[in-house]
Image (cartoon, rainbow, N blue to C red; front, side):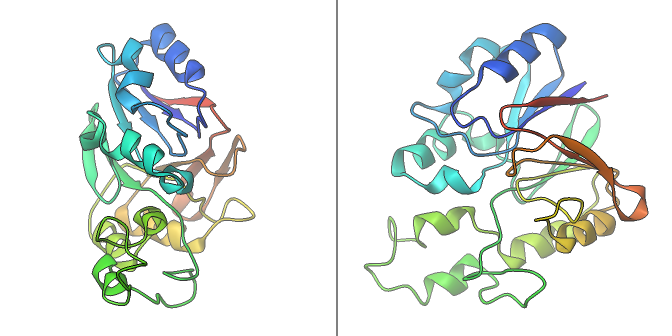
Length: 215
C-alpha cells in the first residue's frame, strides 16, 4: 500500500496516524509543509516504519527556514520532483511546485525554459544564495516537464492539479498521457475528490492534511 498526504501546512498528525494504523510500504507527501523544524524531525515517529517521499509545494520556498527544513533535511534526498522512482513496485513520477506567469503558464509558451535561463537575467540583488530567486526554486520549468515526459511511470504526483480541477492544467493531463500514467495524486487546492481524465487516468485530489491510499 502507498499513502498520499495532502498539504500538511504544519499538521502532520493525520499522516503519522495513518502510517501507524495501516503500515504502508511508503508515504508520499504532496507539498506545502510549513516546516518550523526539519521534515525528518516532524516525521521521526514513522521514519523507521515506512519509506517517506515528497514533492515540494509553492509555499515551501516562502521562507528561508521552510526551504532549509525541507530541502536540506536528512529526507531531502527523497524529493521526487523531476524524476521517476520505483516505490513498492510502482514507478512514481513527481512534479512539484507550481506554474507561474513569469516562468511558464500553460498553455502559453514558456518565458524561461530552464533555471539557468532565468539566472542569466537576474541581477546580483535579485539572486538568492547566488542562485535564482528563492520562490522560483518551486516554479515549474519547461525543461523539467519535458524531461519527465520522455519517461514512463505508473503514478504521477503533482502539487498543481490537472484539468479535472477547475483551476487545473491540461498540460498535466498531457504529461500523464505521454508517460503512460494510470493515476494522478495532487494537492494544492485542499479539495478531496476523484475524477477521470483522458486515457482513463484516475485523478485523486487530496485535501489539506488529508490522506488517501493506493494498493
